[in-house]
Length: 82
Image (cartoon, rainbow, N blue to C red; front, side, top):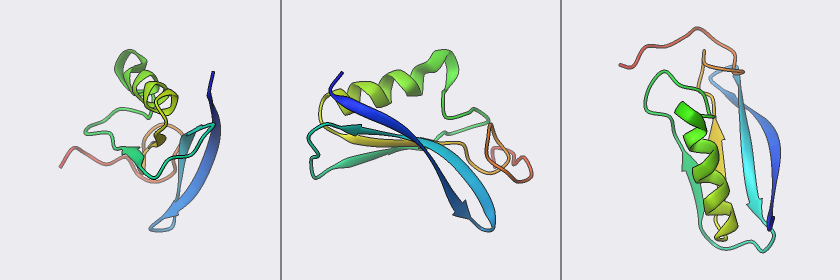
């Protein structure tokens, strides 16, 4: 494995968002933020976002995937798709 993963917590409008950074062993100049487009967690359906993030990190791209407010491990009221 040529990348490492670490949990992160950051603030968004007074709520705590929880995510995972996958950092390649050799940092590049481009990173990718995986934003969920609906009521899913940072893992995604069938762990899709996990696989995408790890594949990108293996290819040298740092990635961040996170649960938005009210989803998964992040705090706040659950939000609808709109």
